[in-house]
Image 1 (cartoon, helix red, strand yellow):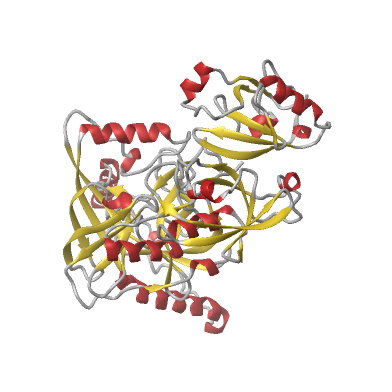
Image 2: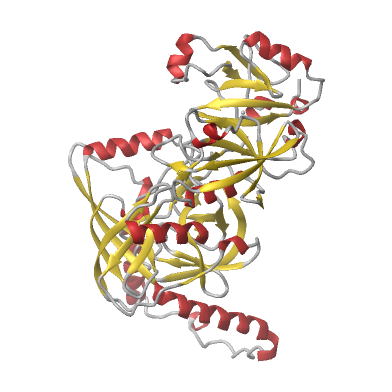
Length: 523
C-alpha cells in the first residue's frame, strides 16, 4: 500500500451531514412511485416461489460462529461509550496544526474531521465539535480514549450504550502514547475485561467497537489480526512506543478511542488510526490499535497521578535484521542495535556505545527495539535495569538507571533503516559533500557530529531504496568513520562489488543504520 495513493489518519471525526444529493435521491424515489403506481409484478416481493430453507446441519458452523459473535458483542457493548467534544481553536493552535502536518511524511496527515480537518478562517477563534469513542475501565466512571479525541476540549459529553448522557472531565492525557482518561459521575458501570496483547498472533479473530462517522454509535465490525509489532503510525520523532496491532476489522473516522477485543471479549487494543484512500476518508483495510500492554500501564498512571512519568535511556536503535546482522557478527537476526547515544543521558553515563547490540533486558531476551521502547517508557524514572549487550562480538552486561523523559530526544527510539559523495557514486546512486559550517548551521547539527552530507539521491537507486534523502548526514560506512567525502569514497570503493554496505545515518536529529544493496543497481 503506497503512501502516494493512501493516507494514514487518526480515526476521529466531526459531525457530518448527508449530502443534499443523497437526500434528493430519496425524494426522487418517492415521487416516481407516486406518479407511476403500476409496477411489474416480477419486481414485487413474494412473486417468486418460496425457496427451500437450507438445512440447519448444513450451516451449523456459521450459526455457531454467529452465536459466538453475538455473545461477545453483548458482553462488550455496555463497556463502550460515545465521546462528543467541544473545543475552541485559536489562530495559534491552527498554525501549530498546519506546521505539524507539514512536518509529517508525504501522504500522512492527522484527521480530525471530514476532508482532513485543517481549520478554515484561522484569524478567528472557532468552536469545533469532534466525535470519538471510549472504553469504560471502572464501575465508577473512568474511561480511556485517545488524547487526540479530547485534546483542547472545553466540554465533553459521554453517551452510554443505554443512551444515558453525562458530562465528562479530563483526568489526564499522555501525548507520548496518544491516550487519555476521562471521568463521568456514574456508578455501577460495566468495565471491560483486560486482555494480553503480547499473546496475539496474526490471524486471530478480533472485533472493533466504536462510533464510526459519529452518527453510527455502538457499531461492531469483525476481522483478524493482520500483523503485530507495527511501528507507531505517527512516530514523527522515532521515540514514541510502537508495537501497534494492525487489523482488517473495519475502523472508520469516529472509531478513535474505541475497543479492539479478542474472541473472549477482552480488551487487547485501543483503536487509533487508519489508512484511507485519497478523498474518501474511509477505511481501506488497514487499521491500527495501541496494544493493551501500553494502555493498561498508561491508564493506571493517569488515574493515580493525572500524568505519566516516562523513563528514558537516551538512545536510538535499529532492529537487527538479516541484512545488517552480518556487520555485527550476529548469527541470528534478533536484538536492537544502538545507533545513537545522547550525551549526558543514562545510557551515556552507563557506558553504552554506538554499535552495541542489546540482546536482553533484565535477563529476558530482546527480539527488537520496540520491546525496549515499550518496557522503558512504562518504567518510572529511577528504575534500575540490566542490559545484556554484544560489543565487538563480546557479551557483557551494563547496569543503568532510567532517567525522566522531558522532551523530544530523550526516550529510547527505534527506527528502521538511509548515502553520498562530491559528484555521483554510480554504485550507490547518490552524491555527498563535506559537512561544512554553513550546512551544519542549516541542519542544526551539533558540533560533535562528523560525517558527509547527502546532496543528491538518484531515484530508484540503492540509496533511494534505503530511504536516504538530501540533507542526511552519513557518519559511518561499514562501521568505519566517514568524516570527509574522500574518506567516505575510500570506504565505498574498498567494498567488494556486489557486497552490501552498512551506513550510519543522521537524519533530523536521529541516527539509524541503513543497509544498502549495490547489487540491486542497474548501471
